Image 1 (cartoon, rainbow, N blue to C red):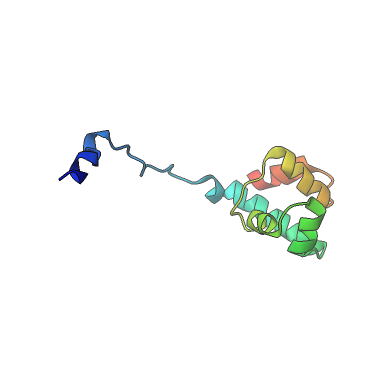
Image 2 (cartoon, helix red, strand yellow):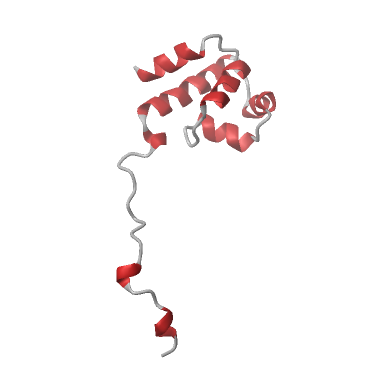
Length: 98
């Protein structure tokens, strides 16, 4: 009987089931960017381990980025472009938007 006094009434519960219609990582531009980064790493014959060493990041972080499971912030994107020897980061972004 005492346990019932600690139950939160339904009127006070927050609705936490609402999700955005489309997750950011499912966006085609993010997927295209991940594919371009993966393609460039393949062209340079860089393994995930080697790329992680160049970036100074854990291998799991690099893998998740290359597979589109993780987003890049703009500064980090520039580091990736440097590690992948991409001369024009803006051109890479423009190509992903098409």
